[in-house]
Length: 163
Image (cartoon, rainbow, N blue to C red; front, side, top):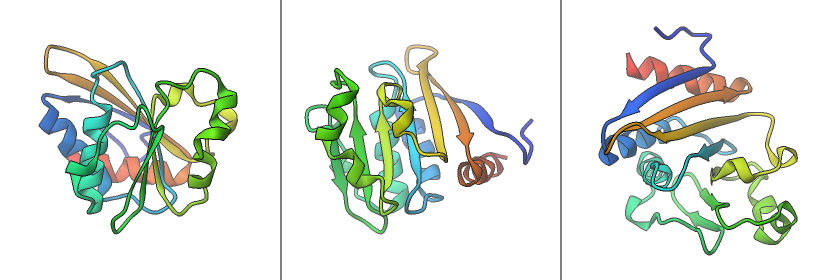
């Protein structure tokens, strides 16, 4: 059971289309300045989830691809999205060279894959964290945690939509 005070929520995603649908649901609630930290092993659904976010925010989902080699992809739409992939980040000192700081000014929704590689000093005070894990051949588990008032409100909206 989920209450208005819930700071975390775990759900099972039964397919990649379900993962994309989950992202789309969140995307419909996002605002400029929102920050989502995505964590999970390779193939856990992070990029598929971002594709859903794009759909929910009015960005064409087919333009979404993993920015593993570019670090950051920007997607323009009603909300500007900055899709960041830190998989290849070897040392935190490389962050300054990625251009990430330019996207943390509140004008973008920032979606960071491999956010566990982001030093704590780069994390905003208010963000949503989603940990993806394999729980079967095609099934994933998503654990959503809210840190801060805006993200707690977002989590509450999501759990209300799920009822």
